[in-house]
Image 1 (cartoon, rainbow, N blue to C red):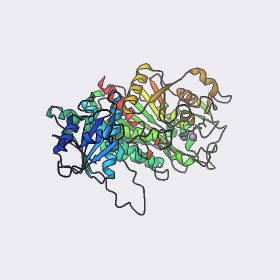
Image 2 (image 1 turned 60 degrees about the vertical axis):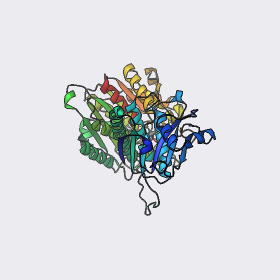
Image 3 (image 1 turned 120 degrees about the vertical axis):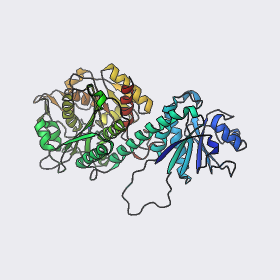
Image 4 (image 1 turned 90 degrees about the horizontal axis):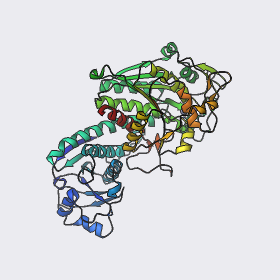
Length: 507
Ligand code: BES
Ligand code: MN
Ligand code: ZN
Protein backbone atom coordinates (compact mmCIF):
# COMPACT_ATOMS: atom_id res chain seq x y z
CA UNK A 1 0.00 0.00 0.00
CA UNK A 2 1.07 3.52 -0.77
CA UNK A 3 1.38 5.79 2.28
CA UNK A 4 2.11 9.47 1.73
CA UNK A 5 2.15 12.64 3.80
CA UNK A 6 0.80 15.97 2.61
CA UNK A 7 0.53 19.45 4.05
CA UNK A 8 -2.75 21.35 3.92
CA UNK A 9 -6.29 21.47 5.17
CA UNK A 10 -8.00 18.11 4.84
CA UNK A 11 -11.21 19.81 3.63
CA UNK A 12 -9.29 20.81 0.47
CA UNK A 13 -8.15 17.28 -0.45
CA UNK A 14 -9.67 15.40 -3.37
CA UNK A 15 -10.07 11.74 -2.38
CA UNK A 16 -12.62 8.95 -2.39
CA UNK A 17 -12.87 9.49 1.33
CA UNK A 18 -11.35 11.77 3.95
CA UNK A 19 -11.15 10.69 7.57
CA UNK A 20 -11.55 13.11 10.47
CA UNK A 21 -12.35 12.36 14.11
CA UNK A 22 -14.36 13.20 17.16
CA UNK A 23 -13.83 12.76 20.89
CA UNK A 24 -16.77 11.44 22.82
CA UNK A 25 -18.86 14.24 24.32
CA UNK A 26 -17.67 16.99 21.97
CA UNK A 27 -20.62 18.90 20.50
CA UNK A 28 -18.80 21.57 18.49
CA UNK A 29 -15.87 19.97 16.63
CA UNK A 30 -12.69 22.03 16.32
CA UNK A 31 -9.49 21.65 14.29
CA UNK A 32 -9.62 19.64 11.08
CA UNK A 33 -13.01 18.13 11.93
CA UNK A 34 -14.27 21.66 12.63
CA UNK A 35 -13.00 22.87 9.26
CA UNK A 36 -14.80 20.03 7.46
CA UNK A 37 -17.92 20.62 9.53
CA UNK A 38 -17.89 24.28 8.54
CA UNK A 39 -17.39 23.49 4.86
CA UNK A 40 -20.36 21.11 5.07
CA UNK A 41 -22.55 23.78 6.63
CA UNK A 42 -22.57 22.18 10.07
CA UNK A 43 -23.52 18.67 8.92
CA UNK A 44 -21.27 17.01 11.53
CA UNK A 45 -22.69 19.12 14.39
CA UNK A 46 -26.13 18.13 13.18
CA UNK A 47 -25.27 14.41 13.39
CA UNK A 48 -23.98 14.96 16.93
CA UNK A 49 -27.03 16.96 17.96
CA UNK A 50 -29.33 14.28 16.58
CA UNK A 51 -27.51 11.55 18.52
CA UNK A 52 -26.35 9.82 15.33
CA UNK A 53 -22.69 10.41 16.19
CA UNK A 54 -21.23 10.25 19.68
CA UNK A 55 -17.51 9.89 19.12
CA UNK A 56 -17.33 6.51 20.80
CA UNK A 57 -14.25 4.35 20.30
CA UNK A 58 -14.70 2.22 17.18
CA UNK A 59 -17.68 4.24 15.95
CA UNK A 60 -17.75 5.68 12.42
CA UNK A 61 -20.18 7.95 10.62
CA UNK A 62 -20.26 8.62 6.89
CA UNK A 63 -21.30 11.92 5.27
CA UNK A 64 -21.65 12.75 1.58
CA UNK A 65 -20.49 16.33 0.83
CA UNK A 66 -22.09 16.36 -2.65
CA UNK A 67 -19.65 18.94 -4.02
CA UNK A 68 -19.26 21.11 -0.92
CA UNK A 69 -15.65 19.90 -0.71
CA UNK A 70 -13.57 17.96 -3.27
CA UNK A 71 -13.77 14.64 -1.34
CA UNK A 72 -16.58 12.25 -2.22
CA UNK A 73 -17.09 11.00 1.34
CA UNK A 74 -16.29 12.12 4.85
CA UNK A 75 -15.76 9.48 7.51
CA UNK A 76 -15.82 10.63 11.12
CA UNK A 77 -14.00 8.22 13.43
CA UNK A 78 -14.80 8.15 17.14
CA UNK A 79 -11.78 8.55 19.44
CA UNK A 80 -13.56 7.67 22.68
CA UNK A 81 -13.17 9.66 25.87
CA UNK A 82 -10.46 12.33 25.81
CA UNK A 83 -9.17 11.31 29.27
CA UNK A 84 -8.67 7.69 28.15
CA UNK A 85 -7.01 8.64 24.88
CA UNK A 86 -3.76 6.91 23.95
CA UNK A 87 -1.89 5.40 20.99
CA UNK A 88 -4.08 2.29 21.11
CA UNK A 89 -7.15 4.53 20.65
CA UNK A 90 -5.42 6.01 17.60
CA UNK A 91 -4.74 2.59 16.07
CA UNK A 92 -8.29 1.51 16.87
CA UNK A 93 -9.87 4.62 15.27
CA UNK A 94 -7.61 4.47 12.22
CA UNK A 95 -8.41 0.79 11.72
CA UNK A 96 -12.17 1.25 12.09
CA UNK A 97 -12.24 4.20 9.70
CA UNK A 98 -10.18 2.58 6.96
CA UNK A 99 -12.26 -0.59 7.12
CA UNK A 100 -15.36 1.55 6.63
CA UNK A 101 -13.68 3.35 3.71
CA UNK A 102 -12.75 0.06 2.06
CA UNK A 103 -16.24 -1.33 2.53
CA UNK A 104 -17.61 1.70 0.69
CA UNK A 105 -15.24 1.07 -2.20
CA UNK A 106 -12.83 3.95 -1.61
CA UNK A 107 -9.38 3.44 -3.11
CA UNK A 108 -7.75 6.84 -2.49
CA UNK A 109 -8.12 7.88 1.14
CA UNK A 110 -6.82 10.85 3.14
CA UNK A 111 -6.77 11.04 6.94
CA UNK A 112 -5.89 13.44 9.67
CA UNK A 113 -3.36 12.32 12.28
CA UNK A 114 -5.62 11.32 15.15
CA UNK A 115 -4.31 12.86 18.34
CA UNK A 116 -1.99 15.14 16.42
CA UNK A 117 -3.96 18.24 17.33
CA UNK A 118 -5.48 18.36 20.80
CA UNK A 119 -4.92 14.75 21.85
CA UNK A 120 -1.67 15.50 23.67
CA UNK A 121 0.25 12.65 22.05
CA UNK A 122 3.71 12.84 20.56
CA UNK A 123 3.02 13.70 16.93
CA UNK A 124 5.46 11.24 15.36
CA UNK A 125 4.10 8.45 17.55
CA UNK A 126 0.53 9.40 16.65
CA UNK A 127 1.38 9.31 12.92
CA UNK A 128 3.07 5.95 13.42
CA UNK A 129 -0.05 4.63 15.17
CA UNK A 130 -2.32 5.93 12.38
CA UNK A 131 -0.27 4.08 9.77
CA UNK A 132 -0.10 0.92 11.89
CA UNK A 133 -3.84 0.92 12.61
CA UNK A 134 -4.62 1.61 8.96
CA UNK A 135 -2.32 -0.95 7.40
CA UNK A 136 -2.86 -3.69 9.96
CA UNK A 137 -6.64 -3.39 9.54
CA UNK A 138 -6.31 -3.84 5.78
CA UNK A 139 -4.06 -6.90 5.93
CA UNK A 140 -5.41 -9.88 4.04
CA UNK A 141 -4.05 -13.35 3.66
CA UNK A 142 -3.88 -14.20 -0.02
CA UNK A 143 -5.42 -17.65 0.17
CA UNK A 144 -5.07 -19.97 -2.81
CA UNK A 145 -8.53 -20.06 -4.37
CA UNK A 146 -9.62 -21.20 -7.80
CA UNK A 147 -12.04 -18.30 -7.94
CA UNK A 148 -10.78 -14.92 -6.76
CA UNK A 149 -13.29 -12.64 -5.10
CA UNK A 150 -13.99 -10.16 -7.87
CA UNK A 151 -16.08 -7.14 -7.03
CA UNK A 152 -13.95 -6.23 -4.03
CA UNK A 153 -12.04 -2.98 -4.18
CA UNK A 154 -8.96 -2.48 -2.02
CA UNK A 155 -7.69 0.78 -0.58
CA UNK A 156 -4.66 1.67 -2.71
CA UNK A 157 -3.29 4.80 -1.12
CA UNK A 158 -3.60 6.62 2.18
CA UNK A 159 -2.40 10.19 2.65
CA UNK A 160 -1.76 11.60 6.10
CA UNK A 161 -2.74 15.26 6.00
CA UNK A 162 -1.15 17.75 8.40
CA UNK A 163 -2.20 21.38 8.50
CA UNK A 164 0.90 22.92 10.07
CA UNK A 165 4.12 23.07 8.05
CA UNK A 166 6.22 22.95 11.22
CA UNK A 167 4.77 19.54 12.10
CA UNK A 168 5.41 17.88 8.75
CA UNK A 169 8.80 16.45 9.68
CA UNK A 170 7.42 14.62 12.70
CA UNK A 171 4.47 13.25 10.75
CA UNK A 172 6.74 12.05 7.95
CA UNK A 173 9.15 10.38 10.37
CA UNK A 174 6.34 8.65 12.28
CA UNK A 175 4.59 7.50 9.11
CA UNK A 176 7.81 5.96 7.86
CA UNK A 177 8.33 4.02 11.08
CA UNK A 178 4.69 2.91 11.03
CA UNK A 179 4.97 1.63 7.49
CA UNK A 180 8.15 -0.35 8.19
CA UNK A 181 6.60 -1.94 11.26
CA UNK A 182 3.25 -2.70 9.60
CA UNK A 183 4.92 -4.21 6.53
CA UNK A 184 6.98 -6.37 8.87
CA UNK A 185 3.82 -7.50 10.67
CA UNK A 186 2.41 -8.41 7.24
CA UNK A 187 5.39 -10.70 6.67
CA UNK A 188 4.87 -12.30 10.09
CA UNK A 189 1.11 -12.73 9.67
CA UNK A 190 1.51 -14.37 6.28
CA UNK A 191 4.16 -16.81 7.54
CA UNK A 192 1.95 -17.72 10.50
CA UNK A 193 -1.21 -18.00 8.39
CA UNK A 194 0.37 -20.38 5.91
CA UNK A 195 -0.42 -24.03 6.56
CA UNK A 196 2.44 -26.27 7.59
CA UNK A 197 2.64 -28.01 4.21
CA UNK A 198 3.60 -24.60 2.82
CA UNK A 199 5.47 -23.05 5.76
CA UNK A 200 7.76 -26.01 6.38
CA UNK A 201 10.98 -25.47 8.35
CA UNK A 202 12.78 -25.17 5.00
CA UNK A 203 10.25 -22.61 3.75
CA UNK A 204 10.53 -20.63 7.00
CA UNK A 205 14.32 -20.57 6.63
CA UNK A 206 13.97 -19.58 2.98
CA UNK A 207 11.59 -16.75 3.91
CA UNK A 208 14.11 -15.49 6.47
CA UNK A 209 16.88 -15.64 3.87
CA UNK A 210 14.79 -13.83 1.29
CA UNK A 211 13.90 -11.12 3.78
CA UNK A 212 17.57 -10.73 4.76
CA UNK A 213 18.63 -10.39 1.13
CA UNK A 214 16.00 -7.69 0.62
CA UNK A 215 16.95 -5.55 3.62
CA UNK A 216 20.70 -6.23 3.78
CA UNK A 217 20.94 -8.51 6.81
CA UNK A 218 23.37 -11.38 7.23
CA UNK A 219 21.62 -14.75 7.35
CA UNK A 220 23.01 -18.18 8.13
CA UNK A 221 21.02 -21.41 8.18
CA UNK A 222 22.38 -24.45 10.00
CA UNK A 223 21.32 -27.84 8.67
CA UNK A 224 20.93 -30.94 10.82
CA UNK A 225 24.57 -32.04 10.39
CA UNK A 226 25.71 -28.63 11.63
CA UNK A 227 23.27 -28.81 14.55
CA UNK A 228 24.70 -32.21 15.36
CA UNK A 229 28.18 -30.70 15.39
CA UNK A 230 26.85 -27.98 17.74
CA UNK A 231 25.59 -30.68 20.09
CA UNK A 232 21.95 -29.66 19.83
CA UNK A 233 20.60 -32.97 21.09
CA UNK A 234 17.34 -31.53 22.43
CA UNK A 235 16.34 -29.84 19.19
CA UNK A 236 17.36 -32.89 17.14
CA UNK A 237 15.22 -35.14 19.35
CA UNK A 238 12.09 -33.25 18.32
CA UNK A 239 12.89 -33.41 14.61
CA UNK A 240 14.07 -37.01 14.46
CA UNK A 241 10.65 -38.29 13.41
CA UNK A 242 10.12 -35.70 10.72
CA UNK A 243 10.57 -36.07 6.98
CA UNK A 244 11.00 -32.30 6.73
CA UNK A 245 14.54 -31.37 7.76
CA UNK A 246 15.00 -29.00 10.70
CA UNK A 247 16.67 -25.63 10.21
CA UNK A 248 18.36 -23.26 12.62
CA UNK A 249 18.25 -19.71 11.31
CA UNK A 250 20.66 -17.01 12.48
CA UNK A 251 19.90 -13.45 11.37
CA UNK A 252 22.40 -10.76 12.28
CA UNK A 253 22.00 -7.00 12.39
CA UNK A 254 25.41 -5.58 13.27
CA UNK A 255 25.68 -1.83 12.62
CA UNK A 256 29.32 -0.80 12.10
CA UNK A 257 28.99 2.07 14.58
CA UNK A 258 28.12 -0.38 17.36
CA UNK A 259 30.67 -3.08 16.50
CA UNK A 260 31.95 -3.19 20.09
CA UNK A 261 28.50 -3.61 21.64
CA UNK A 262 27.08 -6.97 22.72
CA UNK A 263 23.94 -7.97 20.84
CA UNK A 264 20.40 -8.32 22.05
CA UNK A 265 19.36 -11.82 20.96
CA UNK A 266 15.79 -12.67 20.01
CA UNK A 267 14.76 -16.33 19.93
CA UNK A 268 11.52 -17.49 18.32
CA UNK A 269 9.90 -20.92 18.66
CA UNK A 270 9.50 -22.30 15.16
CA UNK A 271 7.46 -25.48 15.38
CA UNK A 272 6.04 -25.55 11.86
CA UNK A 273 3.40 -28.00 13.05
CA UNK A 274 2.83 -29.53 16.46
CA UNK A 275 0.90 -32.79 16.38
CA UNK A 276 2.12 -33.51 19.90
CA UNK A 277 4.14 -36.47 18.60
CA UNK A 278 3.41 -39.80 20.33
CA UNK A 279 1.83 -37.74 23.13
CA UNK A 280 -0.61 -36.88 20.40
CA UNK A 281 -3.02 -33.97 20.61
CA UNK A 282 -6.79 -34.49 20.26
CA UNK A 283 -7.98 -33.96 16.71
CA UNK A 284 -10.43 -31.09 17.30
CA UNK A 285 -7.95 -28.27 17.67
CA UNK A 286 -4.86 -29.86 16.21
CA UNK A 287 -5.11 -27.65 13.14
CA UNK A 288 -4.49 -24.59 15.32
CA UNK A 289 -0.94 -25.89 15.70
CA UNK A 290 0.03 -24.62 12.27
CA UNK A 291 0.70 -21.39 14.15
CA UNK A 292 3.13 -22.98 16.59
CA UNK A 293 5.85 -21.09 14.73
CA UNK A 294 4.37 -17.68 15.57
CA UNK A 295 7.37 -16.87 17.79
CA UNK A 296 9.64 -17.58 14.83
CA UNK A 297 7.44 -15.47 12.58
CA UNK A 298 7.56 -12.56 15.02
CA UNK A 299 11.35 -12.73 15.29
CA UNK A 300 11.82 -12.83 11.50
CA UNK A 301 9.45 -9.86 11.10
CA UNK A 302 11.10 -7.97 13.95
CA UNK A 303 14.54 -8.43 12.36
CA UNK A 304 13.20 -6.94 9.14
CA UNK A 305 11.99 -3.88 11.04
CA UNK A 306 15.27 -3.60 12.96
CA UNK A 307 17.20 -3.53 9.69
CA UNK A 308 14.97 -1.01 7.91
CA UNK A 309 14.76 1.25 10.96
CA UNK A 310 18.54 1.14 11.04
CA UNK A 311 18.61 0.67 14.80
CA UNK A 312 22.05 1.60 16.13
CA UNK A 313 22.43 -1.53 18.26
CA UNK A 314 23.42 -5.08 17.35
CA UNK A 315 20.53 -7.54 17.30
CA UNK A 316 20.64 -11.24 16.46
CA UNK A 317 17.55 -13.31 15.68
CA UNK A 318 17.62 -17.07 16.28
CA UNK A 319 14.94 -19.30 14.81
CA UNK A 320 15.05 -23.01 15.58
CA UNK A 321 12.45 -24.56 13.30
CA UNK A 322 11.18 -28.16 13.23
CA UNK A 323 8.08 -30.25 12.73
CA UNK A 324 6.75 -32.28 15.68
CA UNK A 325 5.28 -35.39 14.05
CA UNK A 326 4.95 -39.13 14.50
CA UNK A 327 6.89 -41.82 12.63
CA UNK A 328 8.98 -44.91 13.25
CA UNK A 329 11.94 -42.66 13.98
CA UNK A 330 10.10 -40.18 16.20
CA UNK A 331 11.21 -39.57 19.79
CA UNK A 332 9.20 -41.22 22.54
CA UNK A 333 8.27 -40.66 26.17
CA UNK A 334 11.03 -41.84 28.55
CA UNK A 335 13.77 -41.18 25.98
CA UNK A 336 16.70 -39.16 27.33
CA UNK A 337 18.60 -36.55 25.32
CA UNK A 338 21.52 -34.23 26.02
CA UNK A 339 21.29 -30.54 25.16
CA UNK A 340 24.15 -28.39 23.83
CA UNK A 341 25.21 -27.35 27.35
CA UNK A 342 25.39 -30.96 28.57
CA UNK A 343 22.13 -30.90 30.54
CA UNK A 344 20.30 -34.22 30.18
CA UNK A 345 16.54 -34.26 29.62
CA UNK A 346 14.02 -37.02 30.25
CA UNK A 347 11.06 -36.85 27.87
CA UNK A 348 7.79 -37.10 29.76
CA UNK A 349 5.67 -35.73 26.92
CA UNK A 350 6.66 -35.43 23.28
CA UNK A 351 4.13 -32.58 23.23
CA UNK A 352 6.42 -30.45 25.39
CA UNK A 353 8.64 -29.95 22.33
CA UNK A 354 8.93 -26.17 22.24
CA UNK A 355 11.09 -26.00 25.36
CA UNK A 356 13.43 -28.59 23.82
CA UNK A 357 14.18 -26.59 20.69
CA UNK A 358 14.40 -23.37 22.73
CA UNK A 359 16.86 -25.05 25.11
CA UNK A 360 19.47 -25.51 22.40
CA UNK A 361 18.73 -22.08 20.94
CA UNK A 362 19.36 -20.48 24.35
CA UNK A 363 22.65 -22.40 24.58
CA UNK A 364 23.54 -21.10 21.13
CA UNK A 365 22.65 -17.55 22.24
CA UNK A 366 25.27 -17.89 24.97
CA UNK A 367 28.00 -18.25 22.33
CA UNK A 368 27.07 -14.77 21.04
CA UNK A 369 27.95 -13.09 24.39
CA UNK A 370 24.56 -11.40 24.50
CA UNK A 371 23.66 -8.20 26.30
CA UNK A 372 20.21 -9.74 26.81
CA UNK A 373 18.15 -12.61 25.40
CA UNK A 374 14.40 -12.54 24.80
CA UNK A 375 12.61 -15.68 23.69
CA UNK A 376 9.05 -15.66 22.35
CA UNK A 377 7.06 -18.85 22.08
CA UNK A 378 3.58 -20.35 21.86
CA UNK A 379 4.82 -22.54 24.67
CA UNK A 380 2.03 -23.77 26.94
CA UNK A 381 -1.72 -24.19 26.97
CA UNK A 382 -1.35 -23.44 30.69
CA UNK A 383 -0.43 -19.85 29.84
CA UNK A 384 -3.73 -19.39 28.02
CA UNK A 385 -5.54 -20.87 31.03
CA UNK A 386 -3.76 -18.55 33.46
CA UNK A 387 -3.94 -15.27 31.54
CA UNK A 388 -6.27 -15.87 28.62
CA UNK A 389 -5.27 -14.70 25.18
CA UNK A 390 -5.31 -10.93 25.62
CA UNK A 391 -2.31 -10.76 27.93
CA UNK A 392 0.96 -12.58 27.44
CA UNK A 393 3.09 -14.08 30.17
CA UNK A 394 6.42 -12.39 30.86
CA UNK A 395 9.01 -14.33 32.83
CA UNK A 396 11.94 -12.07 33.68
CA UNK A 397 13.77 -11.46 36.93
CA UNK A 398 16.06 -8.77 35.49
CA UNK A 399 14.45 -5.50 36.61
CA UNK A 400 15.54 -3.16 33.77
CA UNK A 401 14.77 -5.69 31.03
CA UNK A 402 11.39 -6.55 32.54
CA UNK A 403 10.33 -2.94 33.07
CA UNK A 404 11.35 -2.01 29.51
CA UNK A 405 9.42 -4.94 28.05
CA UNK A 406 6.32 -4.24 30.15
CA UNK A 407 6.41 -0.61 29.02
CA UNK A 408 6.91 -1.58 25.37
CA UNK A 409 4.02 -4.06 25.43
CA UNK A 410 1.75 -1.52 27.08
CA UNK A 411 2.61 1.16 24.55
CA UNK A 412 1.95 -0.97 21.47
CA UNK A 413 -1.23 -2.60 22.79
CA UNK A 414 0.29 -6.04 23.39
CA UNK A 415 0.05 -6.24 27.19
CA UNK A 416 2.39 -8.45 29.20
CA UNK A 417 2.05 -9.64 32.78
CA UNK A 418 4.82 -10.71 35.10
CA UNK A 419 4.92 -14.36 36.15
CA UNK A 420 7.12 -16.05 38.77
CA UNK A 421 10.47 -17.68 37.97
CA UNK A 422 11.02 -19.00 41.47
CA UNK A 423 13.54 -21.92 41.45
CA UNK A 424 11.30 -23.60 44.04
CA UNK A 425 9.24 -24.81 41.07
CA UNK A 426 12.22 -26.88 39.90
CA UNK A 427 11.02 -29.71 42.16
CA UNK A 428 8.31 -30.37 39.58
CA UNK A 429 10.81 -31.00 36.79
CA UNK A 430 13.31 -33.10 38.75
CA UNK A 431 14.03 -36.40 37.00
CA UNK A 432 15.23 -39.76 38.32
CA UNK A 433 17.03 -40.63 35.11
CA UNK A 434 18.32 -37.26 33.89
CA UNK A 435 19.04 -33.72 35.13
CA UNK A 436 15.51 -32.53 34.36
CA UNK A 437 12.35 -33.72 32.69
CA UNK A 438 10.39 -31.85 30.04
CA UNK A 439 7.04 -31.66 31.81
CA UNK A 440 6.19 -30.62 35.32
CA UNK A 441 2.60 -31.80 35.35
CA UNK A 442 -0.54 -29.71 35.32
CA UNK A 443 0.01 -27.25 38.14
CA UNK A 444 1.71 -24.04 37.05
CA UNK A 445 2.46 -25.45 33.60
CA UNK A 446 3.61 -22.13 32.15
CA UNK A 447 5.92 -21.57 35.11
CA UNK A 448 7.53 -25.01 35.06
CA UNK A 449 8.09 -24.57 31.31
CA UNK A 450 9.88 -21.29 32.03
CA UNK A 451 11.90 -22.98 34.79
CA UNK A 452 12.88 -25.68 32.29
CA UNK A 453 14.23 -22.96 29.97
CA UNK A 454 16.11 -21.36 32.88
CA UNK A 455 18.42 -24.40 32.89
CA UNK A 456 19.82 -23.25 29.54
CA UNK A 457 20.25 -19.58 30.36
CA UNK A 458 23.71 -18.12 30.94
CA UNK A 459 24.96 -15.11 32.89
CA UNK A 460 22.85 -12.58 31.02
CA UNK A 461 19.51 -10.84 31.44
CA UNK A 462 16.84 -13.13 30.05
CA UNK A 463 13.14 -12.73 29.33
CA UNK A 464 10.75 -15.43 28.22
CA UNK A 465 7.42 -14.46 26.66
CA UNK A 466 4.82 -17.24 26.53
CA UNK A 467 2.35 -16.06 23.90
CA UNK A 468 0.17 -19.16 23.57
CA UNK A 469 -3.27 -18.17 22.31
CA UNK A 470 -2.45 -14.64 21.19
CA UNK A 471 -0.69 -15.59 17.96
CA UNK A 472 -4.14 -15.65 16.43
CA UNK A 473 -6.87 -13.08 16.71
CA UNK A 474 -10.39 -14.37 16.98
CA UNK A 475 -13.98 -13.38 17.48
CA UNK A 476 -14.63 -15.37 20.67
CA UNK A 477 -15.36 -13.71 24.00
CA UNK A 478 -11.75 -14.15 25.10
CA UNK A 479 -10.50 -11.92 22.31
CA UNK A 480 -10.63 -8.17 22.70
CA UNK A 481 -12.23 -6.92 19.47
CA UNK A 482 -9.75 -4.68 17.70
CA UNK A 483 -10.26 -2.96 14.39
CA UNK A 484 -6.69 -3.55 13.27
CA UNK A 485 -6.66 -7.27 13.97
CA UNK A 486 -7.65 -9.45 11.05
CA UNK A 487 -8.83 -13.04 11.08
CA UNK A 488 -5.97 -15.46 11.63
CA UNK A 489 -2.45 -14.50 12.64
CA UNK A 490 -2.07 -11.37 14.77
CA UNK A 491 1.66 -10.74 14.42
CA UNK A 492 1.98 -10.52 18.21
CA UNK A 493 4.49 -9.78 19.78
CA UNK A 494 6.50 -8.30 16.92
CA UNK A 495 5.61 -4.72 17.77
CA UNK A 496 6.59 -5.22 21.42
CA UNK A 497 10.01 -6.52 20.40
CA UNK A 498 10.60 -3.64 18.00
CA UNK A 499 9.38 -1.04 20.50
CA UNK A 500 11.66 -2.53 23.15
CA UNK A 501 14.66 -2.38 20.78
CA UNK A 502 13.82 1.18 19.77
CA UNK A 503 13.64 2.20 23.43
CA UNK A 504 17.06 0.61 23.99
CA UNK A 505 18.50 2.49 21.01
CA UNK A 506 17.36 5.79 22.48
CA UNK A 507 18.69 5.21 26.00
N1 BES B 1 2.30 -25.57 21.19
C1 BES B 1 1.81 -26.08 22.42
C2 BES B 1 1.21 -25.02 23.32
C3 BES B 1 -0.03 -24.30 22.81
C4 BES B 1 -1.27 -24.76 23.14
C5 BES B 1 0.07 -23.16 22.06
C6 BES B 1 -2.40 -24.09 22.70
C7 BES B 1 -1.04 -22.50 21.61
C8 BES B 1 -2.28 -22.96 21.93
C9 BES B 1 2.94 -26.76 23.18
O1 BES B 1 3.91 -27.36 22.41
C10 BES B 1 2.33 -27.83 24.02
O2 BES B 1 1.79 -28.74 23.46
N2 BES B 1 2.43 -27.71 25.34
C11 BES B 1 1.91 -28.68 26.23
C12 BES B 1 2.91 -28.91 27.32
C13 BES B 1 2.62 -30.05 28.24
C14 BES B 1 2.67 -31.35 27.48
C15 BES B 1 3.63 -30.06 29.35
C16 BES B 1 0.60 -28.14 26.78
O3 BES B 1 0.48 -26.94 26.98
O4 BES B 1 -0.32 -28.93 26.99
MN1 MN C 1 3.41 -29.38 21.91
ZN1 ZN D 1 4.16 -26.61 20.55
